[in-house]
Image (cartoon, rainbow, N blue to C red; front, side, top):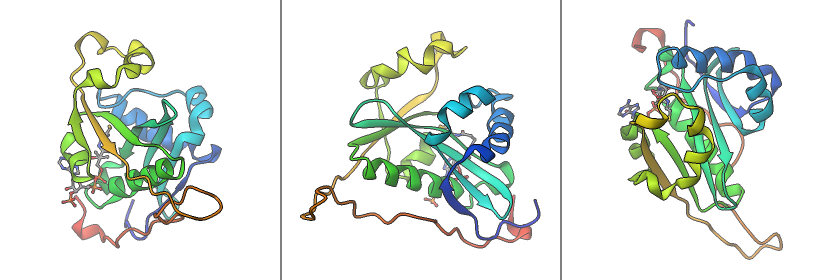
Length: 187
Ligand SMILES: CC(C)(COP(=O)(O)OP(=O)(O)OC[C@H]1O[C@@H](n2cnc3c(N)ncnc32)[C@H](O)[C@@H]1OP(=O)(O)O)[C@@H](O)C(=O)NCCC(=O)NCCS
């Protein structure tokens, strides 16, 4: 990819599955993420948001509902060439906004990069506080008996307004414009 210009975040669709799989499974090959299949992606594509720079996918992330009040941020990945340019933050912001729109009280993640999530307002918690996780995805994880991921959680501010719809989110929706970055400054 030559230049990261005005990357934008939007909900994913079926056509995004091939580049999402390429991105996630390239990290999975190094043990950084869980691998995904086309079948799993098709089943869960509505969880996903994607960041594009022109025609190029530069990042993805998913919001997976767990309980009526909590959801997991997962499958978060940014193309190596596009890292540290705000793509990850924009993706998590979009997922957080989606969580608020769905009236959730908290979002959580299991991660090797708690420092990144700390920058976004997440706090580290005991994994025992999130017991459902262990009985869903973790069972098929090769690291189940020896997990070294850190649990992080962000409590959401739920704003109730006076409109006839009841719940009112204070956040805006739609595309998130990212800063312009030129090739010479990319790592
Ligand atoms: C973790 C990841 C998603 C971050 O994406 P990114 O686009 O590089 O992150 P951003 O540029 O939006 O960074 C947001 C903030 O987090 C910080 N940050 C990003 N990665 C960091 C890291 N590895 N360690 C510490 N801080 C980090 C940035 O400096 C920035 O801080 P600021 O508030 O001072 O601006 C990306 O590095 C990645 O895809 N990693 C491999 C896959 C992975 O580990 N996914 C997480 C699964 S839970």
